[in-house]
Image (cartoon, rainbow, N blue to C red; front, side):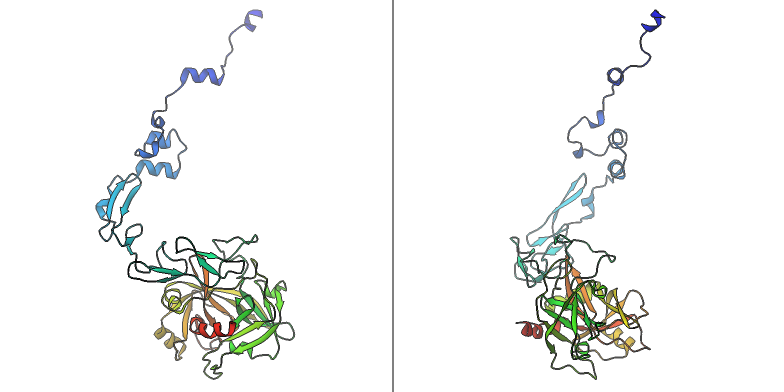
Length: 380
C-alpha cells in the first residue's frame, strides 16, 4: 500500500503537458499579418473560423485595377484588400466619378443640405437653424430647436428611424371645439403650423395638439393666435390650398416636439421630389376618430398622374404613388417628408382626398416649396 501511494500520478498538469507537446504557430508568427495574403492555417485553423477569416483565404487574387475602375484619368493601385484611386485634379470620390465643381446628391461626399455648382468647386449652405462646419459641407445645429433631425430621449441625434418608433415630432393634430381631431398639420417653427386652407376654414375656433402622440392626449395643446389663409385659395379648384397657423406660445423643443426643415425650391423640385422616396404622415379617418398613419410614397410623373386622376395639374402640385393601396381616407393636412443625409425636409401637403371612384394609390400634393416666400413673409 505504501509503495502504491508513492507511484507517479496518472495525469500531469496543463503547464507540464504544454512543455512537451507545444506547437509552433507558424502562420501567425509575423506581427503584422494583415499585410499578407490569407492563409488557411492562420485564418481557419489557428483562429476562430468566421466568414471574414475564410474570405481572406479565398479572396479573388485577380488584380482589380485591370478593370480600370478609376474614372476621369484617375490612377489605380492594387492592394491586398482591393484598390485605391488617386484622382486627377478636379475630381473626387472612391472611383473619381464626381467633378468637384458639380453637385452630386447621390454621393456620400458633398453638402449636408443645399448645394450650388461653381467654376472650381461647389458651394454648400444649410437650412435655417444650422451653420456650416469647418469643412464647409457639414451642417451643425445651432440650438435644440434645429429642424428635421430626429433625437432620442436624451436629445441626441438619432441616425436611424424605424416605422415602429413614435411618430414624427413635427406632426400636429387640429382639434375642433369638442376636442376631437379633424385635420393634420406640420410644425414649421416653434410657433407656426402649416396646414391646408380647407382645414383652417372648417371651424371658427379650434386648437392644435403638437407632438407624435396627438390622439392619446399626451401631446401639448396650443391656442391659435392668428390664421393666415393664402389669399389666392380657390375652394372650387383647390388651388393654393394652404394656410399658416400662428400659435400663441412657442413649443418647447425636445425629442417629441421639433419643427421640420423646409427646402429651397430648386433642391426640392430637382432632388427631393423626383429622385428620392418619401413618407406621407398624417391621420387616417376611422369613423369619427383619427388614427395616426404613415405610408411610403414615390414620385409619379405629371402625365401619368393626369391620366389616373383625370385632373389638370398646376406647377404648384405634384403626385405621389403609394407603395401599397389604402382603404381609409387620410385627413387633410397630412404631409409629405423626405429624408436627405439624416435631415427630414417637408416637400408636400395633402389636400382634399380623391373622389370615391378614383385610384387610392395615387395622391395629389401641394408643392410646399413653391410657397416658402409667402411663408417666410408671414413668419417674420
